Image (cartoon, rainbow, N blue to C red):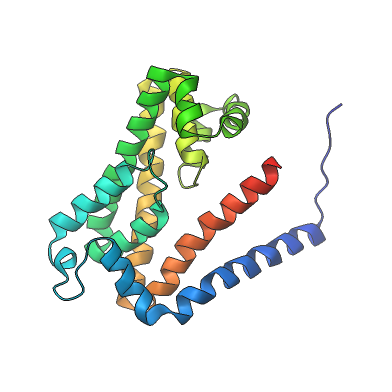
Length: 224
């Protein structure tokens, strides 16, 4: 028998309050430690504290962003933080282009792995339970599934693996993926660029990190 879930204004408000509290608590360390956090992040991404080599060389910074985001299927890359930093380092246009290329490379690799190795790829690079949940979601529309998952950790990688396993035609795979990747890259890069201009980059970085962390916590809780 199908379960019917009832939503009330009170439940929605309580959930929104929980989201705000979690985001606020997550952001506190970044805001308080902003004076040293930003240089540390830039140094971790390859910037030298003395010469600011990456920021002075857009080609090197863009190449680094492409490589990092392109390897997202293999490594636990904080893609939202990388895209936000790219907006600061390369500006909204250059950052969006570099991030878009990197995100598309990761999607291409994930699709190829799923198409070539099937369920073995899911067992190696994604959670089978996540793939099963996405399978149910994609039965209605593969396009909607791809677009909805693009900006989310965990499910973004699993969604492209799943479409590779299903051998979704490239003509149906690439348009929504490329469009959604462009939207995600542009939004985060504009956030990074604007925050750098008005000197609240640590706070913007906190936001870009907190949302994925919140989603991961919610997804893990939901699976339990």
